[in-house]
Length: 377
Image 1 (cartoon, rainbow, N blue to C red):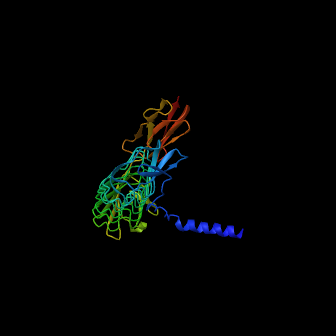
Image 2 (cartoon, one colour):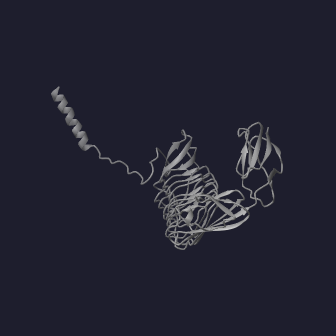
Image 3 (cartoon, helix red, strand yellow):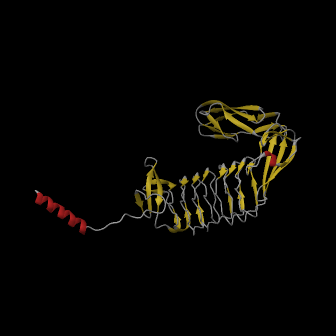
């Protein structure tokens, strides 16, 4: 028995000595190696196996057209670092893709053209960071999320941000040396740290009146940017809060008209009568932020031009209102008494959901209301 055991051990040693030596495959610099392979792509199945996320492609180069389907399943995501550092010159991302993950095209220095799908809602952090050849890109209207440093160091010359975005995140366009023009939608409420820092060609910037927070170093080392403007309109009795720019206290804001606007608290003011007022503040880089406030008359009445509609399920209808007096401040909100029957958006557009009858109410900032009846068949 002892002899047999020794023979077995000797055999195992011989196998170990002469067995071929293997090494683990080197993982890509970012992301996850896909469980599956199709052509030049590795991918994983997501959403209970119904959709595809592309994880990596070591062979991607030149003009790249990403397939809409792999294994007969829709491609809906581009994974983390999927094409980072690849020698890609252009990329077409198909309809159906909803998100581009972090570092997806990070340091693709030859990438000069990108076509994004209308279905895209999210671009992750560093997604197009240091794409120095990328001079232009069109962001889709459905985009809701833009990650920090998403385009930092890229070659963009201008950018128009879609109206769904509520913030310009930290370092989003930092060190974009060629960036000359940035169009900021009215939905943007905040601008993060270093968001537009080091943009040497950016000379002017207009922010929407809804912007309430601007980081102290948001425009650091953007030497040509000397004037930032916010034009805001409110109604008599309506309140407006000056931006919290560079953590400036209310006392640092200059200008204004005390008979037109009354300070209520902190940096919040209330319109007292119609007219115009200007406030301004200068930051540590001698950059001037100017807020031009126009106060309009308060509404005395609001009515729907049409007071009822009958819709089929799924149909939409855009309501219209008349405000008295003409030229009065039109800030208003819409609500549905039963969103399971019909829902309404911030602009008064109604969408029929299910059979039934409900009421849509519009309300001005000073409490004037009107009602609209919706019947869904």
